[in-house]
Amino acid sequence: MKSVHADGNGVWVGWSGITDEELNDNLKSKVNAKIEDAKCRAVGLTEADVEDFYLGFSNRTLWPLFHYFLEYTEFEKSQWEAYKRVNVKFAQVVLETIEEGDTVWVHDYQLLLLPQLIKEARPDVTVGFFLHIPFPSYEIFRTFPWREELLTGMLGADLIGFHTYDYERHFLSSVKRILRLDVNFNEITYHDRIIKVDSFPMGIDYDKFYNAALAHDNPNTEKSELQKRLDTHLNVADNQKFILSIDRLDYTKGIPNRLRAFEYFLNTYPQYKEKVRLVMLAVPSRSNVPQYKKLKRETDELVGRINGEFSTVSWTPIWYFYRSMPFENLIDLYTSSDVALITPVRDGMNLVAKEYVATRTKQDGVLILSEMAGAAKEMNEAILINPNSFEDFATALNKALTMPLEEQKSRMRILQKRLKRYDVEKWAEEFFKTLDATNQIQDISISK
Ligand code: ADQ
Image 1: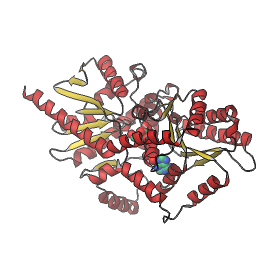
Image 2: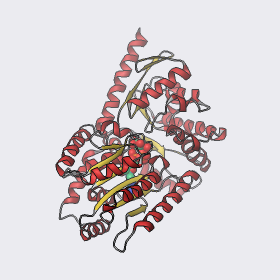
Image 3: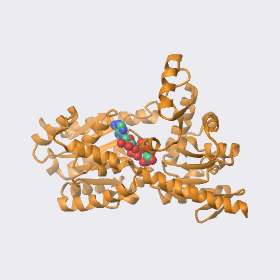
Image 4: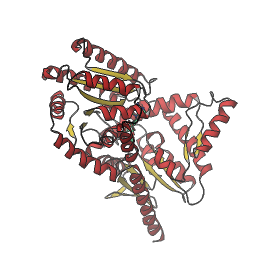
């Protein structure tokens, strides 16, 4: 979203990342200066807001529920109250910021009530909403205690966007069955308004990744420490291939499953021992939420066990990094790997898969992608697998590692062409074009 915001003349409303309690006068002036520079307005959040709204309701209720992790989902009334309170805080800042004729684009599951709060106060303002995570099927969504209020909150928008047609379909089905509203194809009639629902698969800043990879390949570019280390290992061991995985450390990303499947692969195809290495970057995330702590322990143990089982004096099968890396190092990893193994058990889209493709300037490399990622819908040339099947994993890895260069290139060429054409700018443009068209329908129906 950063590049879309930088190119436009919009104002970004969000939380600064510093709680009200932490914000002393000195910090306040620094934050304010930064915020003004970046065309932003800050919403102030207290420690209690962060605890109950963000770590609580957003990440212990909505995130697991919408990703089909019912067993992790908590329904806490006090956290729901915090969620409503913080949505109101966002609404206050938005309402102070907007001017006549403005359009507001609300993002993601933390702000599902915001469209309605804006629309009620300012019916003249156009509101778009985009959900970055899956919208679950009706059978899952109906378990949510405050389901009517949540849907009504979203219906404050004039256009509601999802990554895929399936999420759109699930949302419309919940609207029909829970709110009993009229749904005509992808239009909802609600009071005197028509709300449009559509899918917009999010793209990436393709040129940024492609150009960074080109610069990286230039022999005059100074190599990072990480790149030197990767090069040493690539050169020392003949034919050693790198399999890359990058994710936030999140239970939706299927990390333990992937590790177990890698172990199964090494046992099923022992000829790959000492010939492949899984380079796994897990970026710390929401580490105050108990399930994430548990996942971190499980991942550490699995990596330790598998490395203990297979390592030799000259080979460690898994290189595991638990940290956030600067952009340059992400490019080092993307460009040095032969295969990307991206296997979430559930994922709204997955931009890492797209970024990997964008950095393959020589069009070599193979992407193995889970069918459960929204990105799979538009990346048929990847090897698509069911992330719950170890057989699928092992067969796909073997196929990727033996795929002829010509086939790699022909698959990569198609993927790149599609991603370049539908990049993040185009995605935002399409969303706004549809939002404008929705407004025109609105005007016609009101004048009737
Ligand atoms: P995420 O779940 O965070 O996003 P993803 O789409 O993969 O997942 O995006 C991760 C982003 O973080 C990528 O742009 C990647 O480059 C960046 N990143 C990864 N590792 C990093 C690191 N070590 N340091 C810095 N940056 C790193 C949510 C949804 C997804 C959906 C996106 C966008 O869960 O399904 O694709 O929003 O809508």
